[in-house]
Length: 468
Image 1 (cartoon, rainbow, N blue to C red):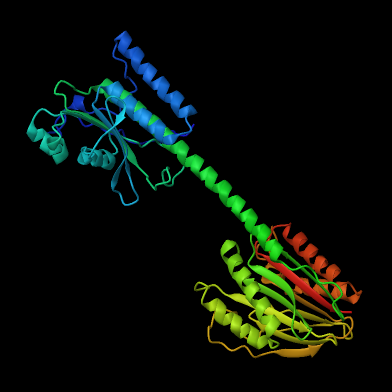
Image 2 (tube, rainbow, N blue to C red):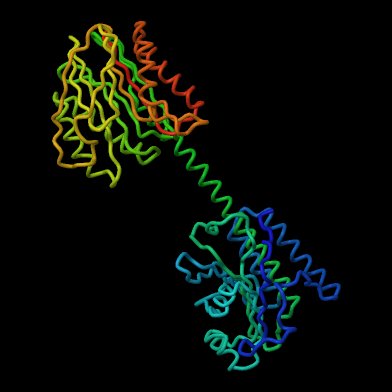
């Protein structure tokens, strides 16, 4: 059931005939009673049938607009009114006529006029209102429209069921609250308590229809979003490079997993114009679709620059200038690149990235490669020139990774992280026995996921390059 009554909510009064004078005690009642039967068998049978038809239409209808028109028509018919309106408030609080109908089940021709002041009062007070206008003075008190249209009977109820949950109301146009309104110019027509009760019941069915539409819209949007995220994940997976085979002098491997559908991390292997292999690991701040878009842009630009520029500093400088124009304030890209030569010579540049580790086989020790500049996107005019060079001897291994691994948290002890010490321990154990790049990478990943119980709070990426 979509609607329930909230506890301890005070009863809302029903305004009756003369709004200018204090209502008598017998004119103030709780919310419209459910008693809409009049004691006349034929009239009561007709009223019950109206409600049953409305319930059936709300349950079966898939066309919201025709359903709303039907309920407004039934409101006119059931109350003996001449016109009926479904009025909603837009995001700015302005009244918008969603449905306007007249007796005979037809749309209202020409300019639509009704008592906006009555609707406003009903919505402000969240209370039903019915009134019979006995004089022009009373009409003016109710609003200029009542006087101009020569209305003699007006009835209005808010669409305010106690719904489960909060949030904007339905319908694709940003409309949130509304009211069901009927009026008549006939001097002989007076709306009574039974009319108001039946009218209120019909209003609740409109509210249910709108709520159903909202929930259906949410369901469809959620399904579309999930489908879009799945597509984004597949596209990003397709952008990740294949692990290159037969790299002269090196054994390389890479792995990544996103915390959500799309990742802000990436790795890449790119051949340069002078025959070296560029090993790249990057991490855009945050995770999800936004960072993933920056990741795709950075990866594409980086590939282009690496193929025409041999200096890592020039590559980073150009990429930084490109990204600062596209990235929002507070977003940045940490980036590490190593250029591997066939003879074991390596040029590296670290722009704010988690320090990669270097296993030295001869000494059985680990070195760390510190940063040589800020992350990309933080300073648009920064010149990256802190390239570090060294040689990898046979058995030496370079391991680059994102902070998602070292900052991975233990499920029962959130203050405890896997930390760089965990990566160092696994690197030492695996590299000491001559593990391949794939074995080393998968060993680190397995230990991290066991440490976290399989939960990934952040994107994770790791790349290994072992001198063979």
